[in-house]
Image 1 (cartoon, helix red, strand yellow):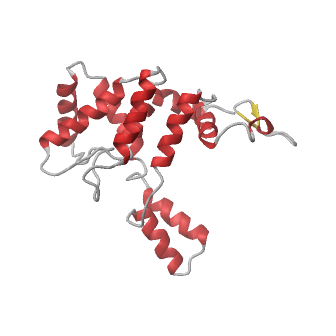
Image 2 (cartoon, one colour):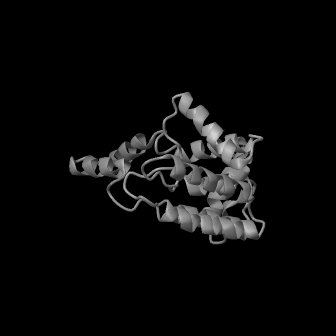
Image 3 (cartoon, helix red, strand yellow):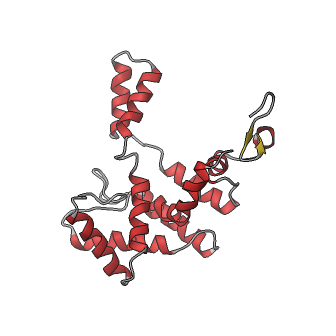
Length: 208
């Protein structure tokens, strides 16, 4: 940035305003390049699905309580962000890491899933990131997002192996748990995100 000049990843801001969507801008900032149209549509679907839909979420509840107590909007937003922290705020990234851990296994997929989850349980990692919902027995957002992922896979936009891993984890949990542990809003977007998670971290560290 210089006086009279603002650039993002080499693009002048005036060339982006009115020409790229918000999802495209998010992609550019985090990955260092503008997405293909199909990639942008997939990210847009994930962002729409991720909008909280009621006061049940702790972050929403605490922000509402803060406002009721007389706190200003800035304080209420900070309170909400603090509550997110690593759970549930970091569950999406943790789910990506889980999928990569499973992908690194040499065993057939069902055995790889079972082995990784068992090792995690033995290490005291009780919860499976990206799976489980305290209200929905089936999270209605996850199947729809996976449909979008399947369409993107068919068009060669993203890899299909992580969607297969997501479904394998879901199937394993259905077969081995006594209560519903459905794939949730962190699990479904992790399938396409896992395809390029390493490059995402690299791009985020680059200097614009």
